Image (cartoon, rainbow, N blue to C red; front, side):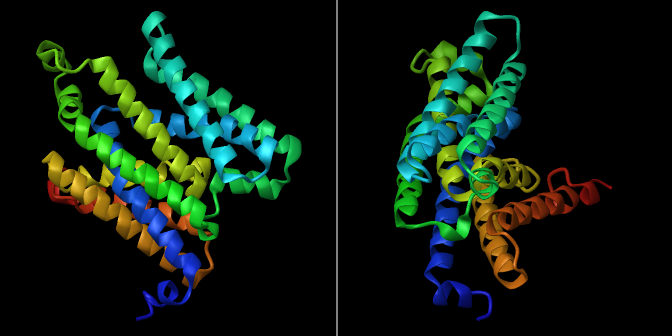
Amino acid sequence: MTLIQPFIEFGFMRRALVACIALAVSATPLGVFLSLRRMSLIGDALSHAVLPGAAIGYLISGLSLVAMGTGGLIAGLAVALLSGAVSRYTPLKEDASFAGFYLGSLALGVTLVSLRGSSVDLLHVLFGSLLAVDNPALLLVGAIAAFTLLVLALIYRPLVIDAFDPDFLRAQGKWSAPLVHAIFLMLVVLNLVAGFQVLGTLMSVGLMILPAASARFWSRHLAVMLGIAMLAAVMSAFTGLILSWHCSLPAGPAVVLSAAILFFLSILTGPCGGILRRH
C-alpha cells in the first residue's frame, strides 16, 4: 500500500506517472531502433538540439508549453536535416556532424535562456519539472505517443529491414531508405520534445536509451526486446517516482537514475551477454 499511496492521494503524482508511461511506450521503442542502428549518441545529440528552439519560445512567451514545444520541434528537425545534409555532401561522418551541431545548439540554448531567465528557469529547461506536469502537457505527451505508435506501426517492416539489411530494402523498391530514415528521425525529435516537457532537455533521452540498452541483455528477438524495453521504462518511472517521494529526490533525475541502475544490473546479470552469465 505504501508504494501506491502517493498515486492514490495526489493528482500531480498520477499525472507524472501517466506522462512517463506515455513516454515509455512511444520513446523507448525508438531507443531500441537507435541502438540497433548504432545511433544512440545521435539521440543524445538531438535531445540537446531542441534547446535553442525551446529557448526562443521561452524568450517570446515565457514558460509556455506551446511556444517552447513548437520551437524545440523546429530546432530539432532543423539540426537533424542539416546534419544529414552535411554528412551526405561533405567528407564529415554523420556522428561528427551531429556532435558539432549539438554542441553549438546546447551552448546557444543555454545562452538564450540566461539572457532573460534566472538560474531557476535554466534548471527547469535543462532538467524539467516532472511533478509539475499539468493537463495540457499531459495531453501533448499523450498525443505524441499515440501518433508515434501509429507511424511506427506503418514503417515497422521497412525500419527493421533498414536496420539489418539496407541493401535489401533498396532492392525491394517499395520504400526509400532516406525516407524511412527521415521519418524515423522525425519521430525521435517529436518524442524528445515530449520528453523535454516532462524531463527537460538533458534528461529526456534517458528514458529513451537506457531501457532500450537494458533490453539487449535479456533477449535477441526484436519483438521481445521492444516489450522488455517498454516494461523496463515503466518500472523505472514507477521506481523513480516512489524514490523521489520517500527520499525527497528530484523526480526526473530519480527516474533516469532508476533506469541507469536497471541498465547496470542488466549488464551484470542479463542472459544475453551479461558479465556474470558469461563467466
